[in-house]
Amino acid sequence: MITSSKSLKDIFFCPEESNFYSHCLETLVLNKCVNSESIIELGSGDGSPVINSLLRTNFNGIVHGFEMNPLSCEAAEAKIEEYGLSDKYIIHNKSFFDSSKPQADYLISNPPYLPALDNKIHQPLLHGGIDGITLTKQLLSLDYENALLMVSSYSNPEGLIDYTITKGYCIANFVITPLAFGYYSSEPKVKNRIEELRKNNMAFYSEHIYLLAGVLFTKQDKCKVNLSSELLKLITAL
Figure 1 (cartoon, rainbow, N blue to C red):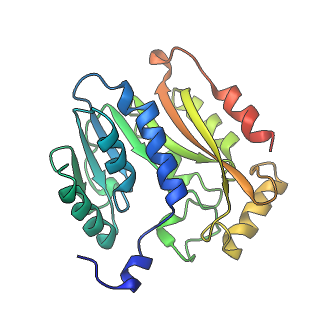
Figure 2 (figure 1 turned 120 degrees about the vertical axis):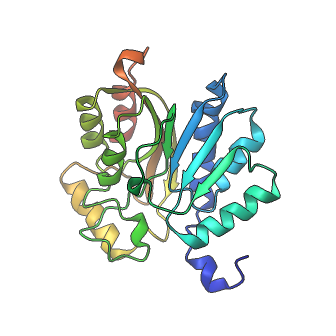
Figure 3 (figure 1 turned 90 degrees about the horizontal axis):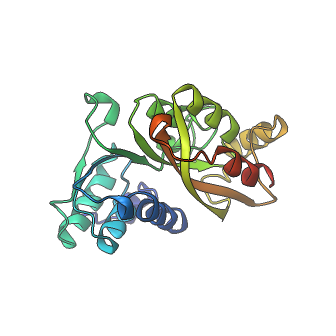
């Protein structure tokens, strides 16, 4: 059990973002599953998004979550046990990339997307590279047939979509929401980098609002419709 307030500060906590991730997971993945599909998750945090989604759906498969922060793992495992979901949600306290690639029907993640020149920021595990999409691109390079990923309008979305094309993906569906810049994204080192990206047309936001999209990437040979242009039209309109 986590007992100190200091420990709680070491766990990523953003209710708005977590609730949106959960909504995307329900809408774009779990409600579409008809068999016992397998899901791999990178960065489970305290487990709340997946737990909330599992409680609201009839998903019969299993989710394997990978989380490097031991405090987050402890919190997630306690919640999983509390809600009786141990047969549907298993947390692994290790790096996903240190394991041999697990087989799964879906890869899901709210990956680190904070852009900064290095990871010397308040939450180093939220560092997404110099333009915020380094880890997202790494996930897509794993070649899963379906990948549900959170994509930020201030983290080079055009560059990411261009990359997905080279990896044989299209955008099968997406959900989008406006969010206010929070504590982590307002950190001067991060905010200054976001502004640099904006000047180079690699970041899109309006005053204190940016867009976060839950995007379902699917291999092109399985994709019935490609919504890449629709997503970019919304993002670049900011």
